[in-house]
Length: 228
Image 1 (tube, rainbow, N blue to C red):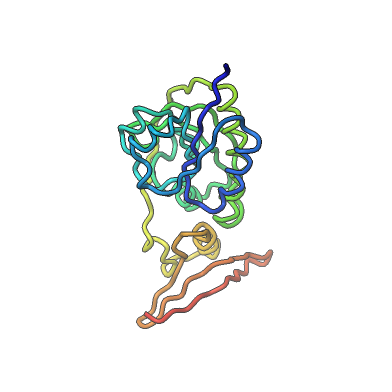
Image 2: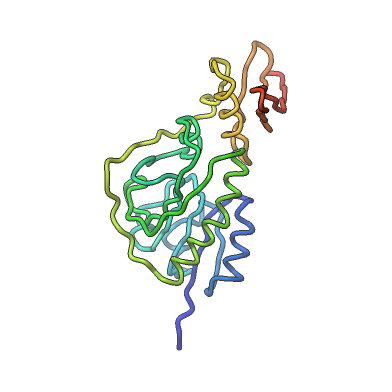
Protein backbone atom coordinates (compact mmCIF):
# COMPACT_ATOMS: atom_id res chain seq x y z
CA UNK A 1 0.00 0.00 0.00
CA UNK A 2 1.37 3.42 -0.96
CA UNK A 3 2.17 5.77 1.90
CA UNK A 4 0.04 8.92 2.04
CA UNK A 5 2.39 11.66 3.30
CA UNK A 6 1.48 13.94 6.18
CA UNK A 7 2.25 17.62 5.66
CA UNK A 8 1.99 20.65 7.95
CA UNK A 9 1.72 24.27 6.84
CA UNK A 10 2.99 26.44 9.69
CA UNK A 11 1.82 30.06 9.40
CA UNK A 12 -0.45 32.49 11.21
CA UNK A 13 -0.82 34.90 8.28
CA UNK A 14 -4.22 35.48 6.70
CA UNK A 15 -2.74 35.81 3.23
CA UNK A 16 -1.77 32.13 3.42
CA UNK A 17 -5.39 30.92 3.49
CA UNK A 18 -5.35 30.49 -0.28
CA UNK A 19 -1.96 28.78 -0.08
CA UNK A 20 -3.30 26.17 2.33
CA UNK A 21 -6.42 25.60 0.23
CA UNK A 22 -4.33 25.06 -2.91
CA UNK A 23 -2.08 22.63 -1.06
CA UNK A 24 -5.09 20.60 0.05
CA UNK A 25 -6.52 20.47 -3.47
CA UNK A 26 -3.38 20.07 -5.56
CA UNK A 27 -0.66 18.39 -3.45
CA UNK A 28 -1.38 14.78 -2.53
CA UNK A 29 -1.22 14.15 1.20
CA UNK A 30 -2.88 14.73 4.55
CA UNK A 31 -2.61 18.46 5.29
CA UNK A 32 -2.73 20.21 8.66
CA UNK A 33 -2.38 23.94 9.22
CA UNK A 34 -0.87 25.22 12.47
CA UNK A 35 -0.89 28.87 13.51
CA UNK A 36 -0.22 28.68 17.27
CA UNK A 37 3.33 28.69 18.59
CA UNK A 38 2.14 26.59 21.56
CA UNK A 39 1.61 23.67 19.18
CA UNK A 40 5.12 23.89 17.78
CA UNK A 41 6.55 21.39 20.24
CA UNK A 42 7.97 17.92 19.84
CA UNK A 43 5.14 15.95 21.49
CA UNK A 44 2.30 17.55 19.57
CA UNK A 45 4.09 17.41 16.23
CA UNK A 46 5.04 13.79 16.84
CA UNK A 47 1.34 12.98 17.22
CA UNK A 48 0.79 14.37 13.71
CA UNK A 49 3.75 12.41 12.34
CA UNK A 50 4.59 14.88 9.55
CA UNK A 51 6.78 13.92 6.63
CA UNK A 52 7.49 17.62 6.00
CA UNK A 53 6.65 20.89 7.76
CA UNK A 54 6.43 23.85 5.37
CA UNK A 55 6.99 27.27 6.96
CA UNK A 56 6.22 30.19 4.61
CA UNK A 57 6.16 32.89 7.33
CA UNK A 58 6.93 32.45 11.03
CA UNK A 59 8.29 34.96 13.56
CA UNK A 60 8.98 32.62 16.47
CA UNK A 61 11.97 30.45 17.32
CA UNK A 62 11.39 26.81 16.39
CA UNK A 63 12.75 24.48 19.12
CA UNK A 64 15.90 22.61 18.17
CA UNK A 65 14.34 19.27 19.10
CA UNK A 66 11.70 19.97 16.45
CA UNK A 67 14.14 20.84 13.66
CA UNK A 68 16.32 17.86 14.59
CA UNK A 69 13.43 15.39 14.41
CA UNK A 70 11.31 16.74 11.54
CA UNK A 71 12.06 18.03 8.06
CA UNK A 72 11.20 21.71 8.51
CA UNK A 73 11.36 23.80 5.34
CA UNK A 74 11.55 27.59 5.66
CA UNK A 75 10.87 30.02 2.81
CA UNK A 76 13.20 32.98 3.30
CA UNK A 77 12.88 36.14 1.20
CA UNK A 78 16.55 36.58 0.24
CA UNK A 79 19.14 34.99 -2.03
CA UNK A 80 20.87 33.09 0.77
CA UNK A 81 23.48 33.23 2.19
CA UNK A 82 22.89 36.92 1.54
CA UNK A 83 20.37 38.31 3.99
CA UNK A 84 20.32 35.83 6.83
CA UNK A 85 18.30 37.10 9.78
CA UNK A 86 15.15 39.06 10.55
CA UNK A 87 12.92 41.46 8.60
CA UNK A 88 14.23 40.39 5.18
CA UNK A 89 11.67 42.32 3.15
CA UNK A 90 12.24 45.61 5.00
CA UNK A 91 16.01 45.21 4.99
CA UNK A 92 16.00 44.58 1.24
CA UNK A 93 13.87 47.63 0.44
CA UNK A 94 15.91 49.89 2.74
CA UNK A 95 18.97 48.81 0.77
CA UNK A 96 17.34 49.69 -2.53
CA UNK A 97 16.66 46.19 -3.88
CA UNK A 98 13.96 45.91 -6.57
CA UNK A 99 14.08 42.12 -6.86
CA UNK A 100 15.07 39.20 -4.66
CA UNK A 101 14.76 35.43 -4.44
CA UNK A 102 12.77 33.17 -2.17
CA UNK A 103 15.09 30.51 -0.79
CA UNK A 104 13.56 27.24 0.45
CA UNK A 105 15.90 25.94 3.12
CA UNK A 106 15.95 23.19 5.71
CA UNK A 107 15.71 24.63 9.22
CA UNK A 108 18.59 23.87 11.52
CA UNK A 109 20.17 25.28 14.67
CA UNK A 110 21.77 28.31 12.98
CA UNK A 111 19.57 31.20 11.82
CA UNK A 112 18.85 30.74 8.10
CA UNK A 113 22.01 28.66 7.69
CA UNK A 114 20.42 25.44 6.45
CA UNK A 115 20.94 23.78 3.06
CA UNK A 116 18.88 25.02 0.12
CA UNK A 117 16.26 23.01 -1.79
CA UNK A 118 15.57 25.60 -4.49
CA UNK A 119 15.16 29.33 -5.18
CA UNK A 120 12.60 31.38 -7.12
CA UNK A 121 12.56 35.04 -8.22
CA UNK A 122 10.39 37.67 -6.50
CA UNK A 123 9.62 41.26 -7.51
CA UNK A 124 9.66 43.85 -4.70
CA UNK A 125 7.35 46.49 -6.15
CA UNK A 126 4.33 47.70 -4.19
CA UNK A 127 3.35 47.54 -0.56
CA UNK A 128 4.55 44.88 1.82
CA UNK A 129 1.07 43.35 1.76
CA UNK A 130 1.11 43.17 -2.03
CA UNK A 131 4.56 41.58 -1.97
CA UNK A 132 3.56 38.99 0.64
CA UNK A 133 0.49 38.11 -1.43
CA UNK A 134 2.68 37.89 -4.52
CA UNK A 135 4.75 35.20 -2.79
CA UNK A 136 1.76 32.86 -2.42
CA UNK A 137 1.70 31.28 -5.91
CA UNK A 138 5.51 31.17 -5.94
CA UNK A 139 5.72 29.38 -2.61
CA UNK A 140 2.92 27.04 -3.66
CA UNK A 141 4.93 25.99 -6.73
CA UNK A 142 7.96 25.44 -4.52
CA UNK A 143 5.99 23.35 -2.02
CA UNK A 144 4.54 21.25 -4.83
CA UNK A 145 7.97 20.67 -6.37
CA UNK A 146 9.52 19.69 -3.04
CA UNK A 147 6.60 17.42 -2.12
CA UNK A 148 6.69 15.60 -5.46
CA UNK A 149 10.42 15.33 -6.13
CA UNK A 150 11.93 15.48 -2.60
CA UNK A 151 15.14 17.19 -3.77
CA UNK A 152 18.23 16.86 -1.61
CA UNK A 153 19.07 20.32 -0.21
CA UNK A 154 22.54 21.65 -0.99
CA UNK A 155 24.73 23.47 1.53
CA UNK A 156 24.89 27.24 1.20
CA UNK A 157 28.03 28.65 -0.40
CA UNK A 158 29.53 32.13 -0.38
CA UNK A 159 30.10 34.83 2.19
CA UNK A 160 26.99 35.36 4.35
CA UNK A 161 25.46 38.78 4.90
CA UNK A 162 23.46 39.21 8.10
CA UNK A 163 20.26 41.21 8.53
CA UNK A 164 19.20 42.61 11.90
CA UNK A 165 15.55 42.32 12.85
CA UNK A 166 13.97 45.76 12.62
CA UNK A 167 12.03 47.23 15.53
CA UNK A 168 8.85 49.37 15.48
CA UNK A 169 10.86 52.49 16.31
CA UNK A 170 12.90 51.96 13.13
CA UNK A 171 9.82 53.05 11.17
CA UNK A 172 10.23 56.69 12.21
CA UNK A 173 10.49 58.71 8.98
CA UNK A 174 11.08 62.14 10.55
CA UNK A 175 14.80 62.22 9.73
CA UNK A 176 14.60 60.96 6.15
CA UNK A 177 15.67 63.48 3.51
CA UNK A 178 14.41 61.95 0.26
CA UNK A 179 10.81 61.41 -0.85
CA UNK A 180 11.77 58.08 -2.40
CA UNK A 181 13.05 56.88 0.98
CA UNK A 182 9.87 58.00 2.71
CA UNK A 183 7.85 56.17 0.07
CA UNK A 184 9.88 53.01 0.63
CA UNK A 185 9.51 53.17 4.41
CA UNK A 186 5.74 53.57 4.17
CA UNK A 187 5.23 50.76 1.67
CA UNK A 188 7.63 48.29 3.28
CA UNK A 189 5.66 48.46 6.55
CA UNK A 190 2.22 48.55 4.95
CA UNK A 191 1.01 45.01 5.69
CA UNK A 192 -1.23 43.07 8.03
CA UNK A 193 0.28 42.89 11.52
CA UNK A 194 3.16 45.31 10.90
CA UNK A 195 3.71 48.63 12.72
CA UNK A 196 3.29 51.49 10.27
CA UNK A 197 5.83 54.13 9.31
CA UNK A 198 5.26 57.11 11.55
CA UNK A 199 6.13 60.60 12.77
CA UNK A 200 5.66 61.71 16.38
CA UNK A 201 5.00 65.11 17.90
CA UNK A 202 4.64 66.05 21.54
CA UNK A 203 0.97 65.12 21.69
CA UNK A 204 0.25 63.17 18.51
CA UNK A 205 1.45 60.22 16.45
CA UNK A 206 0.94 60.13 12.67
CA UNK A 207 0.98 56.70 10.99
CA UNK A 208 1.18 56.35 7.20
CA UNK A 209 -0.07 53.79 4.69
CA UNK A 210 -1.23 53.47 1.04
CA UNK A 211 1.66 55.53 -0.31
CA UNK A 212 1.78 56.49 -3.99
CA UNK A 213 4.42 58.35 -6.00
CA UNK A 214 3.47 60.03 -9.26
CA UNK A 215 5.64 60.94 -12.25
CA UNK A 216 6.28 64.38 -10.74
CA UNK A 217 7.83 62.77 -7.64
CA UNK A 218 4.89 63.84 -5.51
CA UNK A 219 4.08 61.50 -2.62
CA UNK A 220 0.56 60.91 -1.36
CA UNK A 221 -0.38 58.66 1.56
CA UNK A 222 -3.16 57.89 4.00
CA UNK A 223 -2.47 59.21 7.51
CA UNK A 224 -3.92 58.05 10.82
CA UNK A 225 -3.52 60.51 13.70
CA UNK A 226 -3.79 59.39 17.32
CA UNK A 227 -3.34 61.26 20.56
CA UNK A 228 -0.40 60.08 22.66
